[in-house]
Length: 398
Image 1 (tube, rainbow, N blue to C red):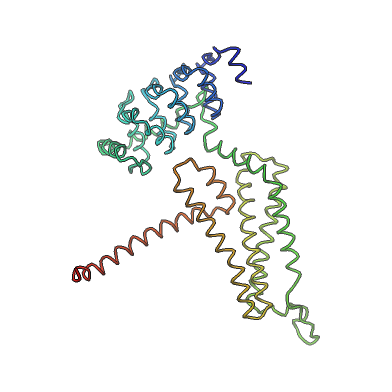
Image 2 (cartoon, helix red, strand yellow; image 1 turned 45 degrees about the horizontal axis):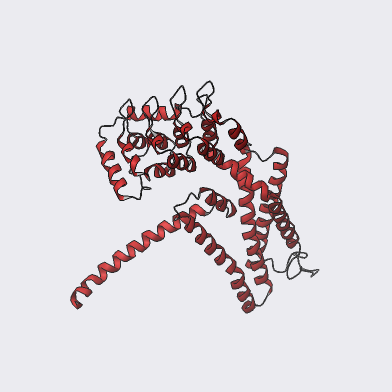
């Protein structure tokens, strides 16, 4: 459709509305990367058109809204666009900094021709490094190129006597600065990510509901299928209670079965609520809960199986089955660690994959990140300790 319109009226790429916004401005504002690519292929000069109020180009808007792919697309096709400034003297790096997106800043700094923008001041004398330091007192750890990092560090430490009132002024400006055609701040990248996740959930909601319903049904039935039978002695005060009621593994069976049943039932109930309320952004947290509940219900169901088998079988056989059953958790932890650490170490934009994986694993990825950091610290301390202990011995031998 857009191709046909542009083929018929090629000058549409330069048409502006009352605010000076072109079709490229709107495509960038909404984050439509394929449309942005199409418009630039038809007319690259549209990337140099600024709006009426702020004199912002499409690249400024893309950087401010944190759209790394669009920033990359515009700079690659229109390199000179990166040097344009708005009516305050802000360049693309100023806007990248206020987006608080490290990915966008890294994308701009990949181009050596734009490195000098770090030192470019606006009308108030503020460089992009000033804006970054206003809410980040430390140096950026995301910059991997040594020359870029050294240049940033030099500018960072040159900013001395930076008063808190000046920081407050910049932070206020960053908050008040609009990004839309009417100056409003809306539909941030985080909100668009939520929309993507909701769209993904809608695709798998049926299978998710079936899994939750099956777990709820199985665990409900297991609670009334008591292993070992009931006490039937007429003279026993506990007549009718389970024979294994004092067995700790039986208690673990009941507790884990109850947890699995409750969590899976909650997940099913959330699905029913969302059918009525709709899969909107306002209920994003409910969708996350549904995924988390199902994950932990599955974990509790495996514990239920292992505890139930161990309670009724002979100790030797029960121990073997217990080992086999808990091998599920070894495989689970290995899979989660392998995938998550691979994503964390990737240079690609893997936020959506991490978000999806976090949903599926009940939100335990932050814990894995903590464990990974602790493991690194422990390894470093152990290496230092060993070198301290064996250094004298090596000196004597050598």
